[in-house]
Amino acid sequence: MRIHNSIPKAVLWPTEENYSKFREACDDILPRTFDEFMQATTRHRRRPDPSLDPDAVRLDFDPDAMADWCRLYFSKVDSTARRYYASFLLRSGCADDKTN
Image (cartoon, one colour):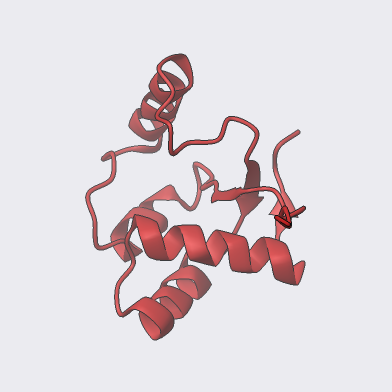
């Protein structure tokens, strides 16, 4: 018997105000500006990557708290660590849903 996880996928969704801090905290390469980030996100929605869920819950987050958590549990702030952090926020109820 297979048990399905009822918690939807989550994605960290930076704001224009915190994007610079978010980008600086990350160890991988991200678009240089918030506008470029939004353009890249729009491109993915037109040509979906199988790993991206269009129904994922977009979460508001604190870039400093994200970086601290990712470094504590993953020793780096990359896409994998951020994915787990988003899931942690959603499961713990510590995040605001920005999907609407």
